[in-house]
Image (tube, rainbow over all chains, first blue to last red; front, side, top):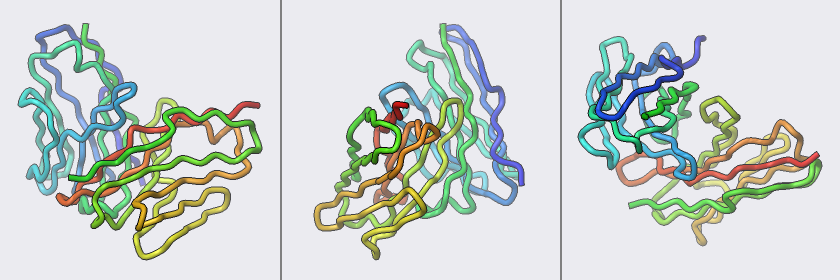
Length: 114
Length: 111
């Protein structure tokens, strides 16, 4: 079974631009969560999607948004990029999103904002 | 809401020695405690978890212990090997059924 894939793996943008990241979950998984990882900040939860609906949202500004398609693939968008948005963005999939389920992480997209 | 604190932030041990990472949580209703390992260039991967109805769980060289009264749980790695070098994260669910993550521990195995 193929794992979670994320594209692109690396991205360089300039301040003010917008970016879209993509995540393809494991086949059969309907929950996709997004995290921001910065050095010393651990894993910061962005949002979680299940059956095309956002079920939970972390404490991030409205510049961060996402969506999920009918095939469970998910995208996240960051508008008006700031230098502080430079981070590794991870997505994780699970069957239903229950906290006791194993989350399967992708390798991440490393975003650098100049 | 749930708060998860993880210590230490960096741990350096000699190859063959044991390593212990500790997490404390605040929500007494939390009932599931996973540990994830993140190797360089990869996403985190579940290595072991424990539910609140047991006090200890082992899987070969790794074990997790849970003290519900004190609200802390620990990861124990025995006979450490170079491939154990990674960042380890603990987590606990909050009342919204989202996992709250610890800040991570960078484990360094010295040869």
